[in-house]
Amino acid sequence: MRKADSPSHAPTQPGSSPLFRAFRILGDGWTFFILREAFFGVRRFEDFLQALAIPRARLTERLSWLVEEGVLRKRPYSDRPVRFEYLLSERGHDVYSMTLMMKDWGDRWRRSKPRPSLQLIHRSCGKRLHPKLVCSACAQPFGLDDLEWRPLATPAPPPQFEVRRQLMTSAFERDTRNDSVARTLAVIGDQWTMMILKEAFQGAEHFETWQSRLAIARSTLSSRLKHLTDEAVFEKVLYQTHPPRYAYRLTAAGKDLFRVGILMLSWGERWLNAAGTPPSCLHKQCGKPLIPMVICACCEAQVFSHDVTFSHKAGRGAK
Image (cartoon, rainbow, N blue to C red):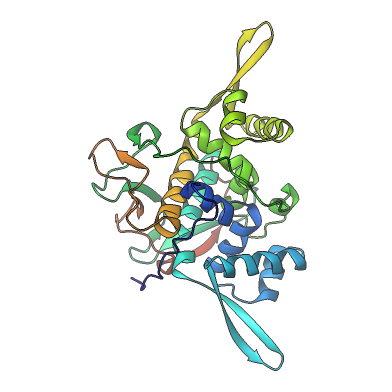
């Protein structure tokens, strides 16, 4: 296992949750697209540019952001002219489990295009990788209903995101890898969308609840709720007729996105929390603080980014 970097303990916003701080760093589509390419071995600016068809200025901004936040590290590879490559730090490698869950969600809930699809191979056992999320304390799988959330010592302030242009659907459609990560990011690759989902995982169903907890603009909330309903992540249910009011309830696909959210929370707790801060929730089955872990369903070994390769197989895709 790699030697770990020292986690940063400086919060990005006083009193903010580790999940919000993780969203602030990772919570948009371009950032995950760049990290996905880094996991495939891309290191240099021009190679990122070619792989993603990303605007040059946006790539420059995202790479600088990831270096500043300690997710990538910058290393010179040419003196004349001076050029740099971008390597994953330990903090960056620790994002890999999130991308595995994004791919798995896309494989389950979004059909791929009729062309060769990306498949991952676990080098340790030589089999196709089917990632499985388990509690690291008891090695048992868990779901949204298997957790007990710890109450916050003090209420977290509403999130305040910097205005950053988000990834448009056309970018996913141009993805040459035909990778389910792209199809998942088309649904959740937006900081506000992920915050809305986080509150839904903790019971929010009504417009006023989200607005109160997040201090989000009504127009922003309305557009994200419509998007998540259109994507069958939420089901819109009429609960009052005069005037008409609706609840937004997680579908089976929506509940399954919890696996991405809990890994992002765990990443924030590991790298962005103050030392000694306990995890945010307990696993009811074993009673231990939850630290999620991704294992290979075939050999049950923990999955690391350096132990996975890929191939393209022709097929109709999966739902």
